Image 1 (cartoon, helix red, strand yellow):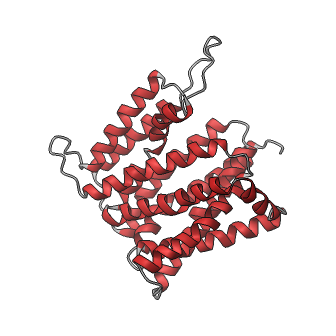
Image 2 (cartoon, rainbow, N blue to C red):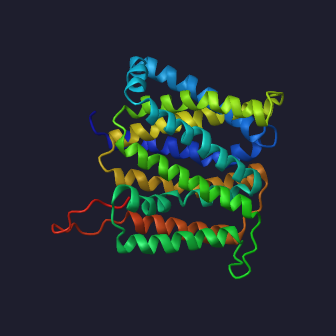
Image 3 (tube, rainbow, N blue to C red):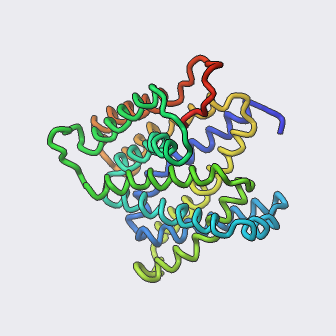
Length: 304
């Protein structure tokens, strides 16, 4: 594919725009659907979209090929994403204000650097330790609304679920470092295999009384844009990008836009502690991304 930085920026901004609406869409939809109902409808819509995209690209036949090659791998991936990751994340949104759940979720990249040590044999750099400290301190500020000494959580369960979702998401990306399939094919297989499990969980622990049109509107939107188009646009942005670092930095726009939308559309009063913690997490991610001057004597892989 011919590199085109302008196209890369446009696709990246499209993905960031989708992700910026996620927290608001989650909170509004969960007022009408249960967590499992939302996940069922959103995943179904995402599967339809992904199948259409694969059909347009002439890659539908690759689904059967890769499933025969690695059935256990794709089943495990489907258990992790969409099932387990979104269950944990959506329940976190159910327990916490949207501003806290979405900001805590941004620590997943820091969690990834920690898990990469035992599972990928990578080494934590000095700036990674700074990022880890700064990022989780920011998470603590958000979780306690600034009362670090009192440890007065809005919802201990909600905080635990949000942080657990970062563990699952990081583990998902770690096991996918060994995935050789086309990314769109792999994601479609994950969602295809995860969907029956989500339907079974909905039947056991929830119900199929999907009556509220507001719930349908939000769940369909999330399935098409958060789980579907955003991924595809980000993938295209990475393929067109002349500099992936400059594209990756655009993701830092998302949480701030998200807070604005939560304030105006959901009516959440934004806590000063959320802004302080968010700035700390963003700084941590920027420190983590910093590569420094190349060292010819240093042959190890980067930690993130």
